[in-house]
Every structure is written in structure tokens, then in C-alpha cells.
Image 1 (cartoon, helix red, strand yellow):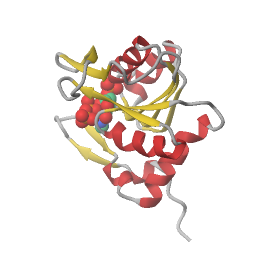
Image 2: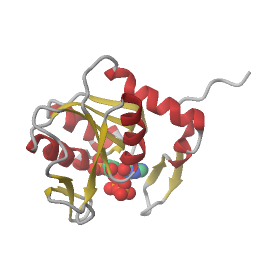
Image 3: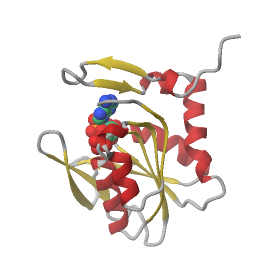
Image 4: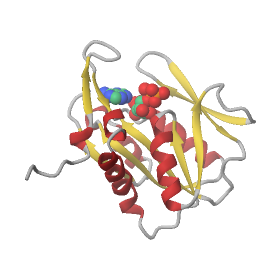
Length: 179
Ligand SMILES: O=P(O)(O)OC[C@H]1O[C@H](OP(=O)(O)OP(=O)(O)O)[C@H](O)[C@@H]1O
Ligand SMILES: Nc1ncnc2[nH]cnc12
């Protein structure tokens, strides 16, 4: 019998996307496989079993796919953290650094009530800039972050340490060396 596949085995690597020298860790192949997708959702939830969570917040774009499934599993609501200009209602905004320049993420200003316990979800943790901006948004609304859950960790880019140093409980399912 072939050995059981791990979450990492379902992730495809695309060389030189979107720039030369980048090994793009493509989770669409994980999402497309029923066993892989369920394994990822179950493993992301495992550390939080029995912990009270009021809402799941997902980071655009692949955090919506994971976060929606996780919120459904927990029977709680889902709130999207989106790139600037995409949310229709009143928003709060946070800037973060990209490789070149800056970007902005936004959250509806009534998406989280003070004291709500929030699980932050995304597909991949690299520098941690996107997640840190998401954390600031949630905390500005008075949300309490129970944890930050990702499928992929790129530890060489420093995001895991950055979020841990902010006092976050960080869980990732697999790690790849390099950029
Ligand atoms: O830890 P960081 O260095 O902030 O990088 C991680 C972020 O980068 C990717 O999204 P991307 O910004 O490519 O946007 P997309 O999901 O809209 O394609 C990934 O899905 C994370 O959201
Ligand atoms: N290597 C990588 N693969 C996929 N998404 C990323 N976001 C930042 N670095 C990435």
C-alpha cells in the first residue's frame, strides 16, 4: 500500500512565479483534492478544539477558502479582511510592507464586536506583514485573537517569529525552506 499523503504532499511548487527566483507554493492542488482539503481543515482546527471561538477572519484571497470551511465547521460567522477598496461598507484600514512598496488591507468597522474571540486564517505565512496588519485590524475593533492558523510556513522569511513575538499563538501545517 502506498504511504499516506501529508498536507505538504498535496502542495504544488511553481518555479519562477510571479518573479524569477520565487518558488511559489501553490495550495490550489491541496484545495482541489477532497482528502487533502479535509485534512487541512481538520488539522488547522485541531489545536483549537474545545477553545471558545466566536468568529473566523480570513485574509484575501486563499484565507477566504480555508476560513469559510473552518467557520462552517465551527458553526460561527466568517469575516473577510480584504485588499483596499473591495469592501462596500464603512471600513478601518491598515498599511503593510510588500517587497516593493506598500499595500492596504481593510475590515468592515462593524465586523467584530469588542471581546469577540477571533481565529485568523490564511494559506501561507511569509514575512508576516499581511497577517500582522490583519491582527491590528481585529484588535482595533476590540477582538481577542485566539490564534493564527496557516497551511504553509516559510520560516526563513521571519513571519512565524514576528507573530510569535507579538504574543500570537501561531499554528502552521507544514514548512518549506527558502523564499
Ligand atoms: O506573510 P506575507 O509576506 O505578508 O505573505 C503572505 C501573503 O502573501 C500571499 O497573498 P498575496 O499577497 O500574494 O495576495 P493574494 O492572496 O490576493 O494573491 C499569501 O496568500 C498571504 O496572504
Ligand atoms: N513562495 C510563496 N508561495 C506562495 N505564496 C507566497 N507569498 C509569499 N511568498 C510566497
